[in-house]
Length: 222
Length: 222
DNA sequence: TTGTTTATTTAACAGTGTTAATTAATTTTA
DNA sequence: TAAAATTAATTAACACTGTTAAATAAACAA
Image (cartoon, rainbow over all chains, first blue to last red):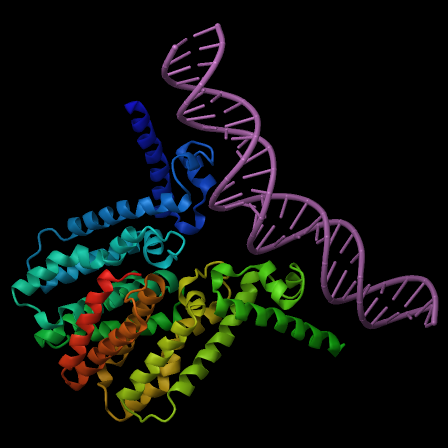
């Protein structure tokens, strides 16, 4: 009687694992029921015995990917201090995760999520993922008065649109054309967001580098 | 001999018009060859006599949409002065166009464009559309020394990621949950971008409104 | 070993884009 | 004008997608 439950979980795991592998390697567009089933070692339609439909399966991946992202960011920002530099590193690590797995960015922010209306909680996880994963770093900066507490929400909103805007353009339109230039733009823009409240001037050095990269971008569209 | 050319152009026009109408009304996901052909008044496969494939057809729409966007922005920013307020209005109008036609935003920035590799020029039109459409407004501000000439490219880059980031979150994830809140966030963030160089402080009023809207956003995800 | 339930697969449907073969319309030629 | 040639448009078909219903295989109970 309990064997059934174990078997069911095991089967679900096979399909989930296969789906996750395809999503990470090739992305949503090359994902199909036949595709998943083949990798899982079963026939298509077997999936329908364990999941309602392919969307059900896909959205079970979201939670795992979220946890993976959280872990990824944690590993990349271990021995840092409690300052805006650490906050910026955390944000950069978050962005890097999606650079590493563009298919997950697609799933999280590109794919229309109208078809699975009742899965609101999962959508909320995605929507607040950046804020959630960076929450500790934000709070550290607030506690130490490193950033103006008045504009926290505005700054968070600014970080959100900056990160997702840059990711969208880089992953979907190859703007800028290189990863180095992408990181540079992200760094500069984060600096400008956080330096408003501290009053620190922008380094001319950074600005120059960025200008050079931007001029490259226009002509060199791979 | 020339009749043939006229006929061909006319036929192309029928299919193009039908495609544009569907894209504007329902978006990419409900676009199909059968769909287009029905609206155009012909059978499917007739399309293949005038276009290489459906992508060929779709990407002919891009140019028209770009011109339409340019016109839209022009109409919405007529009797304004040559200052940052006008530049901000221009940027807002650009964003509004995609709010009006989410299907065009999909086509321009969401849809993967790998399948039609040789259409690089069209992709370039999309990529530079924001800069192109706002070029005059930027130049006016530069000429009148209203914004620091040193950071123009950085500021443009900031505007780009802000606009596309906000549009992505609002159109694809309903963040924030209302159009009013969206415009508010855009306004605040544009203010922060342009007020760095001018040294103008942020209005506390705006900040308060934004905070209120953000707190609404979290709970009210329709 | 039977009978019954459960697990898995095959067959089929409606949809997609696309190509080849067939019919309809038009134009050229005698 | 009538027949022939060319062009335009449609139907039929293929390979793919997600999904459901029916048929088979496996596991378990008596």
